[in-house]
Length: 492
Ligand code: NAD
Image (tube, rainbow, N blue to C red):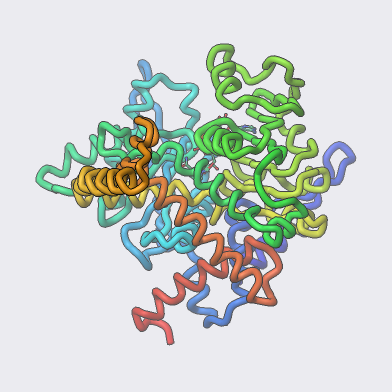
């Protein structure tokens, strides 16, 4: 409870006068996660001690290590936080950014516990980070920093297929995961499962088809499910279906790009995209791949054909749309801009993009949020599939694909002989296709996102104390983690 008091006192004492303007300071990211937890804790009936055990971070490691940069030695600071050991291994991404802090990594680790529980992925939550901006370093220097950080994790038994399994996050991707796997394997001779020490690896290094796009694609499945019926869509004041829905996306990185691309393919119109250098808007729609290539070739999202430029990308968050997808960083929608947001639905691609204070303002204005702990869980879901693939040492579909295709071919032949009609080459190819790894991963992701939304929706409608989807998702998570502790007999 001390931390709630601290959060409350921060929030109230936080009115500071700057240049004559009264500015309400925000709770920290970790305080926001804790206050979200407490909102849900008030809706369930578990002993306070058990709730405290679920809420706290079990282990917080901070490491400082030297790396040669040019002719000098630079000291880097990194963290690995394991929030909950109720399931093992713990799991969570690694972030590289100059704003990484202990508070941020703790918040992200806690979110991972709730996220894994919501989508029934059997891991405890963890997160890691190094405080530096990779844009200021060469590829070779980033490799050295990554490998040295991995060694620090190995020394502390903070990485391993059964212990703690990192993945990509902001500022990292398959390249960094390959370096981590290679460093771990170099010191774990004879461990047959060593590749499962990290997920999000390139396909050639033990990765899985579909991991790169998983978080954005999962977001698409979640938003589609939230708008699948008249009844569901009514919560957001929208008509059902994605067709023609106007979407603004913040951040064209891994999550933002794949979310925007999938929403566009699903029928939505991407009217705005914001990056740190500015934003672009076109009411007739922006082609996501064209924007991506334009940014790649010019170095900026700005000056895209027919689009209006916004020098301040954050101003685009306040432009009217149906669905706003913050997919960059935390606290982007806060007390300073919440009153100006003009959307019907906020679909959280990033972790913690809406501060606790902003959420109350938005809910009062009838703007509902599909929360991060559910909506961006596609990444960890497919990471789970990658971990399973590494442990089983066989790609999904390898054993059954041809057998399935033989049966489908026989069925097609029987249908042709019974009807006297024959299918075209293309029709036959589609009909007899046996599922391969990409099909299984996509099917598992779709099923996971739909089933988890139904559980969150059930908690929202069945518990009268629950007033919003974030609280509903935390209720689902607390329920599952609490049961796993109770099964151990630790709590009555
Ligand atoms: P990324 O580094 O690939 O992309 C982030 C993008 O946001 C970059 O293009 C960056 O330039 C942009 N950006 C930064 N500040 C911005 C600002 N103020 N306005 C507009 N754009 C800005 O990172 P990512 O992996 O896509 O992660 C984004 C968010 O999603 C993070 O909160 C992360 O924790 C969360 N997340 C990522 C994954 C994953 O699988 N990568 C999974 C779950 C959650």
